[in-house]
Length: 317
Image (cartoon, rainbow, N blue to C red; front, top):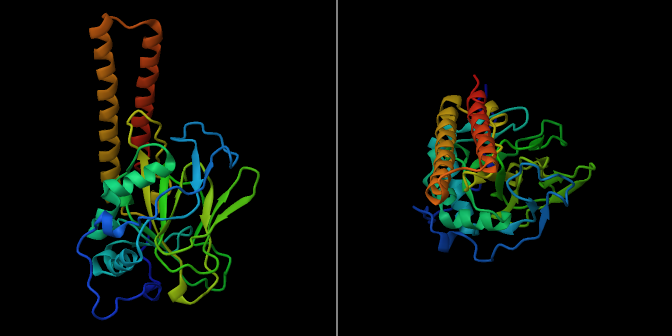
């Protein structure tokens, strides 16, 4: 089970100065950068990975500006609110300081990652329509804590993600170090450095092994803070490799499993509806299924049974 973080990290967040007013809502035209979203991209093949059942050939992109600086500052202020600090702090060996379930306790975070315009921009980078997976996985924060003498300890160690795609946004000011590193299949590293607060890296993290490096400074004001939101394909018939291996270790499991079950069952219902509509269209058009069509239908049914089985198996206490 995950435990609450005892180590304070308040020094990592810049406090709000006198006379500044908190934003009461997220407005895409004001709070999203207008710089455009056409960063350099690396495909899975570029990194040495096979696409397999990945949702897209996309691997990772170089950082691009997603959020405006004023909105980033307001996000950090909301993260210091009592509701977030009292309900969302967890720690594991892999992620020593993590905020999870933030969107349930922060209106700005929820509005940012629920926004159709935000989702459109992330989808545009990946090259396929996406949707946020569910509320508990919106706006997760990974925070660098003091190294206790282990300066090589990563903020988030080498891993692959439990969900297909992640958007990673830097909330702290950039400082030497702090890269998101991707590992190629031949063992080389591709370090990606965030240039500014509010810049974003999109990664097909379920396929590409990666980690988050520490910034070199041990001053809490310079600590690396990122916000992460997970995405799945918007098309219910597209591959969805989601599991709960990672989230299970640092979550309120009763909340996580409730949202996981709702998302998976709704996705399964969409799969059944899509498949049923296709069969109905075939019946109206020609009144029968060919052997090839029957075989395809059987494969789809097997996929749905596997999908439901994974849904159940991943809910473990």
